[in-house]
Image 1 (cartoon, rainbow, N blue to C red):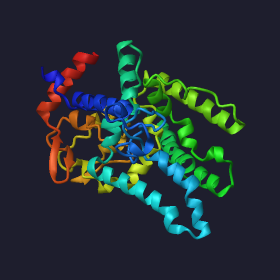
Image 2 (image 1 turned 90 degrees about the horizontal axis):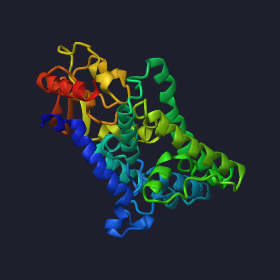
Image 3 (image 1 turned 90 degrees about the vertical axis):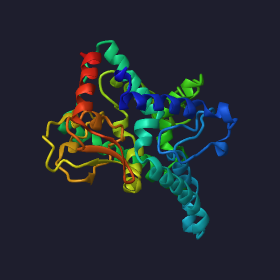
Amino acid sequence: MYKFLTLTNLRRVVQLFAFVFMVYGALLFNTFYSNDKLTTNLPALSCAYDKQSGDYCALIPLQHQFHHRVGGIFDGDIISSLMPTFLTLGGFIILIIILNKAFCGWMCPLGFFQEMITIIGKKLKIKQIKSLDRETLKKVRPIKWFIFAFLVLIFPFLAGLGFVGHELGNPYCNICPSRILTTLATGDISQLYVDKSNMTLMILSLIADFLFGLMIAMALFVRQPFCRICPMLPLQSVFKKVGLLRLVKNGSDKCSSCSNCAKECPMDIFEITNIESNKNITYTDCTLCGRCVEFCPHDDILKLKYGTFDIVSSSKEAFKKRNKIEKGIYK
């Protein structure tokens, strides 16, 4: 019975319920219009193109506001131009304060989908890459910042000013695999297409289709392939220090540098192994999934804390039981 009572299994149950709500939530609340969603500031990739969704992510309104509103600053209409962006970021910050980056590790439909594909890969006995090497990580990690800067902010802003075409008004949405996933999950195949309206849109739609297929193929043997380049992580990292939920390490005199935490981290955050004393180590790539806490073999070195309260702490006994479960399932 114990093997079912793990933090990872609890998280997957939460992910499943979150997936159902985010993809089909409008069916429960009759909220089929964008302005009727529970929130449009979500720190996770839930897509507005899915008409049945319960809410959608902050990246969508941010792009549209930079495209259609921010240009008004140069016409002297500063308050009305910036107010929608302030409201979007304000709602986003409130949600980050509540759950911080756990929106990625516990609630994102695209993250859950990738985890399920990885589990299928294990069941098919496809050889898995346990961890990416540090050189590869150094090359991959900056990509999310590039995507966030150019596709979420710069190109929409330039489109609003007329320096580039309006087809670049929401370029991230045009390539986002969540747009394809969540619409396909509702039986809508309209987002899996090649847009022949113009060359730019055709290229973006081809990138989207390729990226969606590549994500599925890579998830069979690499953990969380798209999460590593997701632009939601940079946006979250700007506000992560205000979040009540956080990962804390206190390994100044106990940590043996066994590297179990980094090996089990689905995002391969090798910095977790650094010796720290009661420090918030919610790194940019961290999704607060808690795997590192589960597999730390020492008492109270790693903790998930909410405010001043300990939610989950590492322990020798829990590690022994968890390790037996892992070997039993994946031997």
